[in-house]
Picture 1 (tube, rainbow, N blue to C red):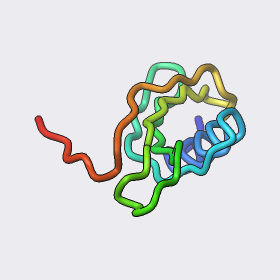
Picture 2: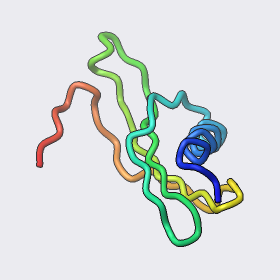
Picture 3: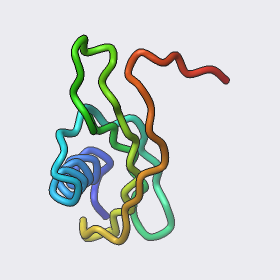
Amino acid sequence: MLSASDAAKRAVHYVTEMTGKHAESVVGVERTDDGWRISVEVVESHRIPDSADILACYQAEIDGDGELVSYRRIRRYSRGRVERG
C-alpha cells in the first residue's frame, strides 16, 4: 500500500495533468478500503489582487498501486472568501 505522502504527490500530479492548472496545496488525505482519497486545491483563475483568485478543490481517488481511479471538482470559490461552518 502506498504511503499517504506518496499518494498525495501522485494526486497532485494527476490533478495537475488532468486540469492543466497549478496545484496550490493538498488540503485533505483519507485512507479508503482500496487506497486513498486526496483533496487538492487548484488555482483555476489568477486575478489581481491575488485575494481575488478563483480556487477549486478537486478530489482524487488513488488506488493502492498509486494509479488514478477517479477525480472530480467538489467546489469552486474565491481565495478571499472565508469558509464558515
